Image 1 (cartoon, rainbow, N blue to C red):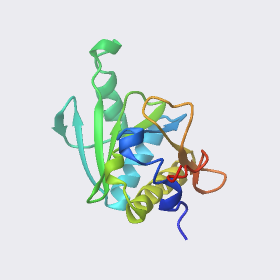
Image 2 (cartoon, rainbow, N blue to C red):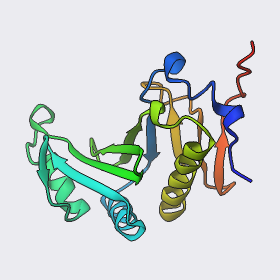
Image 3 (cartoon, rainbow, N blue to C red):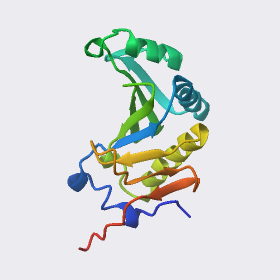
Image 4 (tube, rainbow, N blue to C red):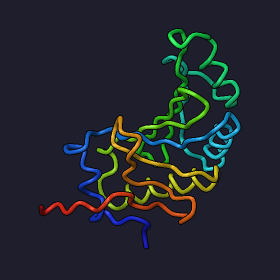
Length: 169
């Protein structure tokens, strides 16, 4: 049985109501955690593309990503390394290294409609959370203090963190 049922989350994942790009975050990370993520991407065989400041590049290591991000020194001179991962052909996750202390990424809710695609999201969160040993939390864009759902490390599964919304109301 799936961790989450589409009927329980479809109102929460409605891009017309909640915006299309929720924020996903893994907090309390290091460069080593970013490397674990990169190793996971390669081990899973997920399609990916890497760029720095919009320029396509070969993905080497998390240390190189961090060096690129911090090369400018001052925050206004920094660039943002971006890793686009496709855990399935129809679903894109966009990771941006704003800092090494968290792993931040976006997913487009328009790509997550239906149980099959929700299951891909859940499996993706579980893979990352288990490999890192950390929670993976999804919030409405810009509201990191109130996660809607995520991989709960203690429960070892993805859980709904808000009350299900009844779409009939």
